[in-house]
Length: 256
Image (cartoon, rainbow, N blue to C red):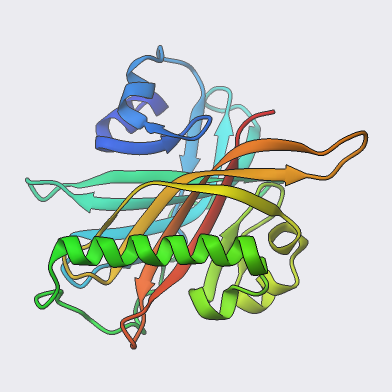
Protein backbone atom coordinates (compact mmCIF):
# COMPACT_ATOMS: atom_id res chain seq x y z
CA UNK A 1 0.00 0.00 0.00
CA UNK A 2 1.33 3.46 -0.96
CA UNK A 3 1.11 5.81 2.03
CA UNK A 4 3.44 8.69 1.05
CA UNK A 5 4.69 10.27 -2.16
CA UNK A 6 8.02 9.24 -3.69
CA UNK A 7 9.45 12.67 -2.86
CA UNK A 8 8.33 12.42 0.77
CA UNK A 9 9.71 8.88 1.05
CA UNK A 10 13.16 9.89 -0.18
CA UNK A 11 13.37 13.04 1.94
CA UNK A 12 12.16 11.11 5.00
CA UNK A 13 14.75 8.36 4.63
CA UNK A 14 17.86 9.90 3.07
CA UNK A 15 20.71 10.63 5.44
CA UNK A 16 22.30 14.07 5.39
CA UNK A 17 24.71 13.83 2.48
CA UNK A 18 23.05 10.63 1.25
CA UNK A 19 24.10 9.82 -2.33
CA UNK A 20 21.86 9.16 -5.33
CA UNK A 21 22.78 8.94 -9.02
CA UNK A 22 21.55 11.68 -11.36
CA UNK A 23 24.13 12.13 -14.11
CA UNK A 24 26.70 10.74 -11.66
CA UNK A 25 26.69 10.63 -7.85
CA UNK A 26 24.92 13.62 -6.27
CA UNK A 27 23.59 14.78 -2.91
CA UNK A 28 20.20 13.08 -2.83
CA UNK A 29 18.49 15.44 -0.41
CA UNK A 30 19.45 18.46 -2.49
CA UNK A 31 18.04 16.78 -5.60
CA UNK A 32 14.68 15.85 -4.04
CA UNK A 33 14.24 19.16 -2.21
CA UNK A 34 14.35 20.89 -5.61
CA UNK A 35 11.65 18.66 -7.09
CA UNK A 36 7.92 19.42 -6.85
CA UNK A 37 5.48 16.80 -5.66
CA UNK A 38 4.43 14.51 -8.50
CA UNK A 39 2.00 11.71 -9.10
CA UNK A 40 4.52 8.97 -9.94
CA UNK A 41 4.56 6.01 -7.56
CA UNK A 42 7.71 4.00 -6.86
CA UNK A 43 7.29 0.53 -5.33
CA UNK A 44 10.18 -1.68 -4.23
CA UNK A 45 10.88 -4.66 -1.99
CA UNK A 46 14.16 -6.21 -0.82
CA UNK A 47 15.09 -9.76 -1.75
CA UNK A 48 18.49 -9.79 0.00
CA UNK A 49 19.86 -8.05 3.10
CA UNK A 50 23.02 -7.96 5.19
CA UNK A 51 24.06 -6.11 8.38
CA UNK A 52 27.47 -5.37 9.84
CA UNK A 53 28.69 -6.98 13.04
CA UNK A 54 28.42 -3.61 14.79
CA UNK A 55 24.81 -3.23 13.64
CA UNK A 56 25.50 0.25 12.27
CA UNK A 57 25.56 -0.41 8.52
CA UNK A 58 23.70 -2.74 6.19
CA UNK A 59 22.50 -3.09 2.63
CA UNK A 60 19.45 -4.32 0.79
CA UNK A 61 18.71 -5.10 -2.84
CA UNK A 62 15.65 -6.14 -4.80
CA UNK A 63 13.24 -5.21 -7.60
CA UNK A 64 11.50 -1.88 -8.13
CA UNK A 65 8.78 -0.62 -10.43
CA UNK A 66 7.41 2.83 -11.17
CA UNK A 67 3.85 3.83 -12.08
CA UNK A 68 2.66 7.18 -13.42
CA UNK A 69 -0.08 7.30 -10.76
CA UNK A 70 -1.62 5.02 -8.11
CA UNK A 71 -3.45 2.19 -9.84
CA UNK A 72 -1.74 2.75 -13.20
CA UNK A 73 0.12 -0.04 -14.97
CA UNK A 74 3.88 -0.21 -14.27
CA UNK A 75 5.89 1.90 -16.69
CA UNK A 76 9.44 0.93 -15.69
CA UNK A 77 11.32 -1.76 -13.79
CA UNK A 78 14.75 -2.47 -12.37
CA UNK A 79 16.71 -3.54 -9.32
CA UNK A 80 17.97 -1.26 -6.55
CA UNK A 81 20.86 -1.43 -4.10
CA UNK A 82 20.67 0.63 -0.91
CA UNK A 83 23.28 0.99 1.81
CA UNK A 84 21.78 1.96 5.16
CA UNK A 85 23.49 3.60 8.13
CA UNK A 86 22.17 4.23 11.65
CA UNK A 87 22.18 7.91 12.56
CA UNK A 88 23.00 9.37 15.98
CA UNK A 89 19.48 8.55 17.20
CA UNK A 90 19.68 4.92 16.07
CA UNK A 91 17.37 5.36 13.06
CA UNK A 92 18.30 3.67 9.78
CA UNK A 93 18.91 6.20 6.99
CA UNK A 94 19.95 5.80 3.34
CA UNK A 95 23.67 6.46 2.87
CA UNK A 96 23.66 5.65 -0.86
CA UNK A 97 21.14 4.26 -3.34
CA UNK A 98 21.50 3.20 -6.97
CA UNK A 99 20.44 0.52 -9.40
CA UNK A 100 19.62 -0.49 -12.95
CA UNK A 101 16.69 -0.68 -15.37
CA UNK A 102 15.51 -3.79 -17.18
CA UNK A 103 12.44 -5.51 -18.58
CA UNK A 104 9.31 -6.28 -16.59
CA UNK A 105 9.71 -8.08 -13.26
CA UNK A 106 6.81 -7.71 -10.83
CA UNK A 107 7.45 -6.47 -7.30
CA UNK A 108 5.87 -8.81 -4.77
CA UNK A 109 5.78 -6.86 -1.51
CA UNK A 110 6.46 -9.01 1.53
CA UNK A 111 8.50 -11.69 -0.26
CA UNK A 112 11.08 -13.61 1.83
CA UNK A 113 14.41 -11.80 2.28
CA UNK A 114 17.64 -13.79 2.02
CA UNK A 115 20.36 -13.09 4.61
CA UNK A 116 23.41 -13.03 2.33
CA UNK A 117 25.85 -12.29 5.15
CA UNK A 118 25.16 -15.30 7.34
CA UNK A 119 28.26 -17.23 6.21
CA UNK A 120 30.71 -14.39 6.87
CA UNK A 121 32.71 -14.07 10.10
CA UNK A 122 31.28 -11.72 12.75
CA UNK A 123 33.81 -8.94 13.28
CA UNK A 124 33.91 -6.29 15.98
CA UNK A 125 36.39 -3.86 14.42
CA UNK A 126 37.79 -3.21 17.91
CA UNK A 127 41.38 -3.71 16.74
CA UNK A 128 41.10 -1.50 13.63
CA UNK A 129 40.90 2.30 13.57
CA UNK A 130 38.04 3.61 11.37
CA UNK A 131 40.42 5.77 9.32
CA UNK A 132 42.58 2.72 8.63
CA UNK A 133 39.53 0.70 7.63
CA UNK A 134 38.43 3.35 5.16
CA UNK A 135 41.91 3.67 3.70
CA UNK A 136 42.17 -0.07 3.15
CA UNK A 137 38.81 -0.05 1.37
CA UNK A 138 39.89 2.88 -0.81
CA UNK A 139 43.04 0.95 -1.68
CA UNK A 140 40.98 -2.13 -2.59
CA UNK A 141 38.63 -0.01 -4.74
CA UNK A 142 41.54 1.52 -6.66
CA UNK A 143 43.15 -1.87 -7.18
CA UNK A 144 39.88 -3.32 -8.50
CA UNK A 145 39.40 -0.40 -10.91
CA UNK A 146 42.99 -0.67 -12.14
CA UNK A 147 42.63 -4.42 -12.62
CA UNK A 148 39.45 -3.96 -14.67
CA UNK A 149 41.30 -1.46 -16.87
CA UNK A 150 44.23 -3.82 -17.40
CA UNK A 151 42.70 -7.31 -17.34
CA UNK A 152 38.99 -6.64 -17.80
CA UNK A 153 36.29 -7.99 -15.52
CA UNK A 154 36.95 -11.59 -16.51
CA UNK A 155 40.53 -11.28 -15.30
CA UNK A 156 39.61 -9.47 -12.08
CA UNK A 157 36.76 -11.51 -10.62
CA UNK A 158 38.70 -14.21 -8.77
CA UNK A 159 40.94 -11.68 -7.03
CA UNK A 160 38.35 -9.11 -6.01
CA UNK A 161 34.80 -10.49 -6.15
CA UNK A 162 33.03 -12.75 -3.69
CA UNK A 163 31.77 -15.98 -5.34
CA UNK A 164 28.21 -14.74 -4.75
CA UNK A 165 28.83 -11.28 -6.27
CA UNK A 166 25.91 -9.55 -8.00
CA UNK A 167 26.31 -7.30 -11.04
CA UNK A 168 23.61 -4.76 -11.91
CA UNK A 169 23.71 -3.62 -15.53
CA UNK A 170 21.05 -1.83 -17.55
CA UNK A 171 18.99 -4.13 -19.73
CA UNK A 172 19.72 -7.21 -17.63
CA UNK A 173 18.34 -8.89 -14.56
CA UNK A 174 20.94 -9.14 -11.76
CA UNK A 175 23.86 -11.29 -12.87
CA UNK A 176 24.42 -13.62 -9.93
CA UNK A 177 27.82 -15.11 -9.07
CA UNK A 178 31.33 -14.98 -10.50
CA UNK A 179 30.70 -17.83 -12.92
CA UNK A 180 27.70 -16.10 -14.46
CA UNK A 181 29.55 -12.77 -14.65
CA UNK A 182 32.47 -14.41 -16.44
CA UNK A 183 30.25 -15.38 -19.39
CA UNK A 184 27.97 -12.32 -19.35
CA UNK A 185 28.45 -9.88 -22.21
CA UNK A 186 26.79 -7.21 -20.07
CA UNK A 187 29.77 -7.45 -17.70
CA UNK A 188 32.80 -8.55 -19.69
CA UNK A 189 32.27 -6.68 -22.96
CA UNK A 190 32.04 -3.21 -21.41
CA UNK A 191 35.21 -1.10 -21.74
CA UNK A 192 35.60 1.28 -18.79
CA UNK A 193 38.27 3.96 -18.38
CA UNK A 194 39.14 6.98 -16.23
CA UNK A 195 37.92 5.64 -12.88
CA UNK A 196 37.57 8.34 -10.20
CA UNK A 197 36.63 7.46 -6.63
CA UNK A 198 34.27 10.06 -5.14
CA UNK A 199 33.63 8.61 -1.68
CA UNK A 200 32.71 5.70 0.52
CA UNK A 201 32.46 4.53 4.10
CA UNK A 202 32.99 1.49 6.33
CA UNK A 203 30.99 0.02 9.22
CA UNK A 204 32.40 0.40 12.73
CA UNK A 205 33.05 -3.34 12.71
CA UNK A 206 35.12 -2.92 9.51
CA UNK A 207 33.28 -5.78 7.79
CA UNK A 208 30.92 -3.96 5.38
CA UNK A 209 31.70 -0.91 3.26
CA UNK A 210 30.82 0.87 0.06
CA UNK A 211 32.56 2.97 -2.56
CA UNK A 212 31.27 5.10 -5.42
CA UNK A 213 32.56 7.36 -8.13
CA UNK A 214 32.74 8.24 -11.83
CA UNK A 215 33.92 6.27 -14.86
CA UNK A 216 33.70 6.48 -18.65
CA UNK A 217 32.15 3.82 -20.86
CA UNK A 218 33.79 3.49 -24.27
CA UNK A 219 31.67 2.28 -27.18
CA UNK A 220 33.22 1.26 -30.49
CA UNK A 221 30.45 2.07 -32.97
CA UNK A 222 30.42 3.41 -36.52
CA UNK A 223 31.19 5.98 -37.69
CA UNK A 224 33.55 6.61 -34.75
CA UNK A 225 34.20 5.65 -31.14
CA UNK A 226 32.31 7.60 -28.49
CA UNK A 227 32.29 7.82 -24.71
CA UNK A 228 29.47 8.05 -22.17
CA UNK A 229 30.02 9.12 -18.56
CA UNK A 230 28.71 6.83 -15.83
CA UNK A 231 28.60 6.40 -12.09
CA UNK A 232 29.76 3.29 -10.29
CA UNK A 233 28.71 1.94 -6.91
CA UNK A 234 30.18 -1.06 -5.06
CA UNK A 235 29.23 -2.84 -1.86
CA UNK A 236 32.11 -4.67 -0.15
CA UNK A 237 32.40 -7.36 2.54
CA UNK A 238 35.43 -8.73 4.40
CA UNK A 239 35.91 -12.46 3.96
CA UNK A 240 37.39 -14.97 6.43
CA UNK A 241 40.90 -13.82 5.42
CA UNK A 242 40.02 -10.18 6.24
CA UNK A 243 40.26 -9.28 2.53
CA UNK A 244 37.74 -6.89 1.04
CA UNK A 245 35.54 -8.60 -1.57
CA UNK A 246 32.96 -7.04 -3.89
CA UNK A 247 29.43 -8.19 -3.08
CA UNK A 248 27.51 -5.92 -5.48
CA UNK A 249 28.85 -4.03 -8.50
CA UNK A 250 26.54 -1.41 -10.05
CA UNK A 251 27.23 0.60 -13.22
CA UNK A 252 24.88 3.55 -13.85
CA UNK A 253 25.35 5.23 -17.27
CA UNK A 254 24.31 8.85 -17.65
CA UNK A 255 21.27 9.41 -19.83
CA UNK A 256 22.31 9.80 -23.50
